[in-house]
Amino acid sequence: MDDLRKYAAELLEKGEVAAVIGYQQVSEKRTKPIIAKTAEDCAKLVFNEYCLNNLAVYLTKARVKELRRVNGAVLKLAITAKPCDVHGIVALIQESQLKREDVTIISFNCAGVVKDFGMDFNGETLATKCVPCDTHKPLYSDMVFGEEKETPKVSDEVLAKIESIEKMSAAERFEYFKAEFDKCIKCYACRAACPLCYCQRCITDKTIPRWVESSAHSRGNFSWNVVRAFHLSGRCIGCGECERACPMDIPLSLLNRKMVIEAKEAYSYISGRSLETPTLVGSFDVKDSDELFM
Amino acid sequence: MEEKIISKEDLLNLCKDVIGNGHTLITPGKTEYTVVKDTSEIVLDTTAKPTKASYKTFVFPKAEPVIYYKRGKNDVQLLDVEVEQKKTVILGAKPCDTNSFNILRHLFNWDYKDEFYNVREKQFIVIGLMCNFSDNFCFCTSVGSSPVSDKGADIFLVPLDENNYTLRVVTEKGGEFIKDYSKYLNAGDEAKTKAVTDTVKHPEIAFDSKQVHEWLGTNFENPKWDGVGDLCLSCAQCAFVCPVCHCFDIVDEDYNYTEGRRMKNWDGCQFGHFTLHASGHNPRDIQGKRYRQRVNHKFKYYVDKFGEILCTGCGRCSRGCAVSIDIKEIVSNCKD
Image 1 (cartoon, rainbow over the protein chains, first blue to last red):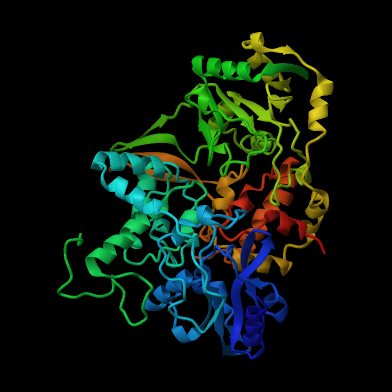
Image 2: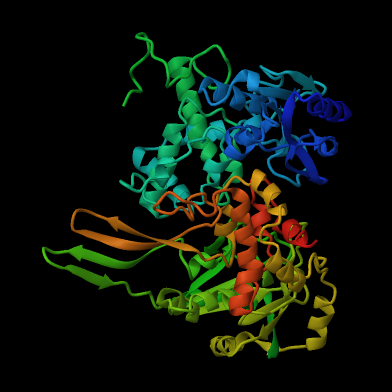
């Protein structure tokens, strides 16, 4: 941990970065984000299996971007990121929301995190996003900390659930998702926690005309959750923050994971894996399968 | 106030009768308070974490039509919405939830008597349950409640032993309700109840709400509000899971060119567009100003207007916050 703190403090001291977006411990089994602007703040930085947030979400926030302006100069931002969070940063760069040279990525070798704060870290409490994870080392980074450790092996319940839903009839599937979406209260925590939901003005906030009904009834909830799944198709990096943020326990990862699988099968594409690859929705090849075109 | 004893078995029998009488029975579920279809679903656990969502949706639904309309050639016809007359019984509400109606009632009866709220609240019977849960986010004791408080409950339960509960009738409404079920009740023992409630661990008092109120009155422009804003992601999780947050938006939903309905939907003050004016001006343009509003509304404005703190100390907003913003910590920091 000292390495991380020292490195972060040095970045600030050298005037390379304006702030370090990281995690701080708030209790034994809970962390929260911190935007470290001083060496004192850097002394609070941690990395462990309770670093659940995907901090890439902050990189597109106007207030955080403003922090880069220091005494007339525009500095970089540093961010501590798990290898999966790096996918989010890469996706933002792919989508021209960020430049690689504007961000210093401090990453870690990662063996997974817990499902929720307060839990002991073991196989059973491994976050569902970590179960199928194949990136335990960051694909892109400016500095890597931490030992390589073995990830607990756990059965992939989300995949099993997706497969069981695929076997349902269309009517059964509709009923299943209707029951789940009916729980939605339209707090938009899913949108807020998502690093790729960076639109300044979301389609749900548009009122003339109103594309998505703001009421949290079946129709309004279907509109919102389906629109969001579509907007993230081929873009979702699978960090699972939407599901973790949802106060109503809606299994959003079922939708998002399914879309990731579809994009991979149809176009051999996974979002956020390569800075050299154009985005799936932003590129076209005549050889592309048109099976999924609407 | 009258204390009785009811066995666990008879409490379930009472629940069966409540459902049998056609009333709606609600109890804490995994995520939210849910309607009980079968009494086997009922789990009364004083050590359970508060559900992620409160039960306000049963008196103040997340989305409800308030009027239906039909446009004619030269006029508009309006059709009123009748609120369903149905008794609803909440069983096992935590003390931090039971007090919510006492707080909400003021708002919905201030400049306009909100029939939708009032009709529902009148039909509600709140059966509270002593609480033995406490985590870093609980602060009921800082806002004038406690894990053994029966404030706001019509009836209050205290587990005496493996098989028995003390059933305390707190309000007249509770007394009226329990009359129909008196066959299940035995004589109470206040000393025994006290012996149990005395063992309950109370969350530490985190702040003095009077001092917070005073500080807020002179620190509207304090730079402390800035730091809060940088981390908040501007969703409405905190407002929507809150038992007493009550902001709503009115929107018209057209079915077709001539017919539609007017909806009353939950709204949240942390949304960036909550205060966005049609002119494009936004008086709460940054998150710090929005969180300042949240704290001021709860600990200053509502107190000034209605004499109640707009907070029950349940800690749901903080426990569920995606970025762990802790209202207890922020309010505790409202001092020089």
